[in-house]
Length: 190
Ligand SMILES: [Fe+2]
Image (tube, rainbow, N blue to C red):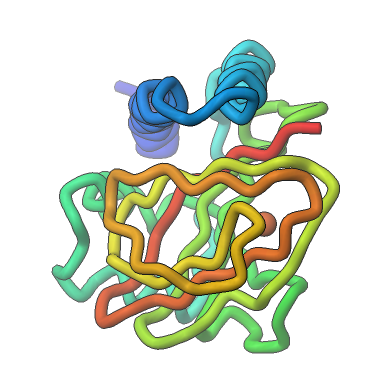
């Protein structure tokens, strides 16, 4: 009989495979040379990741309660089902202490090295702070139609679940959740 944690780890592996496949399909439609950069970053992540190993117990943050509202988009429901087994943490970019913003960092779970990946969760009406970083980044929106600033633009525009959001290296970017929790899978590469 498999341990419950292993079942959730397997479920996470299946989800990650699906999310990467969706990101690759959407990245293929991006203009060049962004397309090549995103495709090579995603390929690098897929080659680097190992089978998921979850800690014996999940770690919750109060923002994770927002996943229980029954308002998740179809893509996000699989995360809602496994959320209790995942290690959530506050973001260092805010002092909200996990009330409004949460991250599930996949690096230690997948044995990542040069790439990074994880889940971002934003409580309805809250904003993930404007920030920039050296790696490039692609998000797959899993749930919630929020407003995103990304890709070097300065305006916030609505982005629907299932969409790809790409930030070039050092682009300032941010996201504001609408009436539903905003949940997204992200991958970063150097
Ligand atoms: Fe970012």
